Image 1 (cartoon, rainbow, N blue to C red):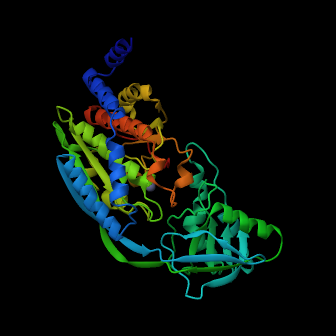
Image 2 (cartoon, rainbow, N blue to C red):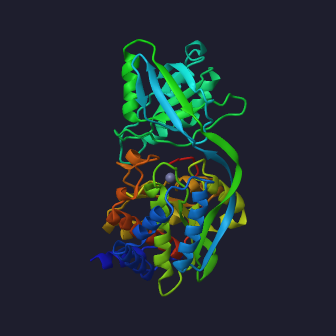
Image 3 (spheres, rainbow, N blue to C red):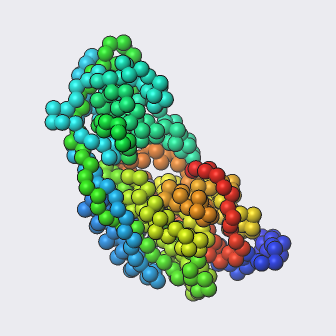
Length: 465
Ligand SMILES: [Zn+2]
């Protein structure tokens, strides 16, 4: 019955047949092979055990690049190469914070990526407490000057993690807004959903012409503690000491592997993750899982008896966490002719949970591919979603250059319990869920590489993620 439906579907496609019945069968076979394979898990296990955390620009980042080049070569890709990316560096140093008054208590806290440190005596100051960065922006300088700003914005759990986007401004822009009003430092309630006593780090930014003040995240239970003391109505005083330090620029690399297309090798399907991670955990779910998924999908296509029509390009992006440096460098280095030949791009960067939906951003002639994807992915629990995909952080700048993208949406219900914390570890990855990811990615990448109907022009607009 399913076969009959498939042939009816194919028969109803326009003359320039996007895909053949053979393509769809091969995609289904790749999908089923992926479900039986531990390749992605073996890759992320190897990365975690043999390298571990890999902060952009660190020695471990170099080790991770060497690991990636060796692995991708040993998997037998047709080409393995690197492209240079210039990035700023940062060292975390040490951190220490406590509440001094009204009740002396220790705080569990993590410096935000990019933050400057305090001097060796640290900062002693009263807390200026805000529920959100918007409340801080609206505040009078008198309420903030000389104080430590605390931004208490909570993030609520959701399958698609949508609240990350509405909460993260306090982390990324809190230091600038607090400094404009004369604050000495900024602390935030961790942007995360874990009740546990560790803080969620993440990148923050300074602005030209605004004082650079230290910035750190406080664990959720410690944020509760500060909030409870503030509610008692007396001034709350904190002591904060950190030795974080921005450093000189350095060069890191996007690591790239290809399965060369048999008919149109210059036309490229990009599947990707990011190789760097934060330094406090193991970088297993963010984003060891993503690079492992992309590489395992590429490897399955490479092992087919015949090369796909178009080239599959697996990219391990550099320095995503500190500001999408690898993604921007790639977009710049490939601007023009090369990007014009990118038939599709996508990144896996939302942990290792099951994929439940496929969003696309295709032009009208992409509909047959959407329907073929729906058909092949439905049996593994992936629904066809909207046509407003962003594609993932490191490819998010490509739709503006006309590149079609897809987003394979992962269940992020627990992702933000671990995100950017010491608890981002290998045991958070369930091998069967990771294999389901590879199954969806390999089928998607293969069909995109076989599809002959143009996916451009794509719908315009900044749909975000
Ligand atoms: Zn990530």
